Every structure is written in C-alpha cells, then in structure tokens.
Image 1 (cartoon, rainbow, N blue to C red):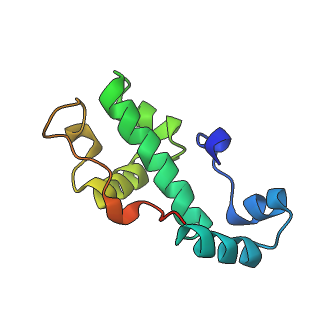
Image 2 (image 1 turned 60 degrees about the vertical axis):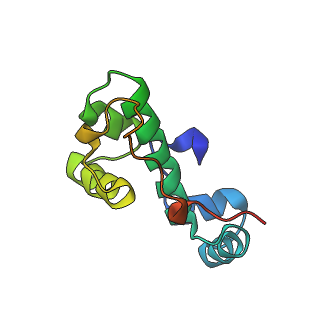
Length: 109
C-alpha cells in the first residue's frame, strides 16, 4: 500500500497480492487494525498529503496527485473530512496546524 500511494490499488487487487479473497482481507484488516483495507489505504494517502502540504511547496493539485487522488474535488472532500479544513488552509507547520485525528488511526494490538 505504501509503495502504491500515487496509484492506489483496488480492494480486489490488494486481496490478490495478499493471496486472499477481498472478504478475507477485509476480515483480517478489521480484526488487526479495526478498519477496512480501503479505509486504511485512505488514511495512508491523507497522511502523506498532510505531510506534503506542510513540508513542501507543491501545489494542492500536485499534492492530490502524489497522494493518489485523480480528482482535486475528491481530495479536498476527503481532506476536509479528516482535518476539518481545506487542504489549502493547511500549508505551513505551526502550533495551529491540524493534526491527523486519533479517531482515524487504526488501533494496534
């Protein structure tokens, strides 16, 4: 998943790479991390976008592309859901910068 952030794989492709059915992969992810594989993948991509926004001068469109979002609109909606602000509002690291909410972090066992 981390190697394919820019060109995300589908749930079926992920399952095939793991040698499992899509349902088996989903059950294992839920049991180990508490989220579906696709939700975890989205978390990885949003996390990468967040770092790029705060640590580079890439445009929001370039960040969206680097995080595997084919649509700037889809990226903006997903980012706002995670952070409560538009990606363009999250450009510089500061004490006021949003952080990835804990409720979206997969739990560890």
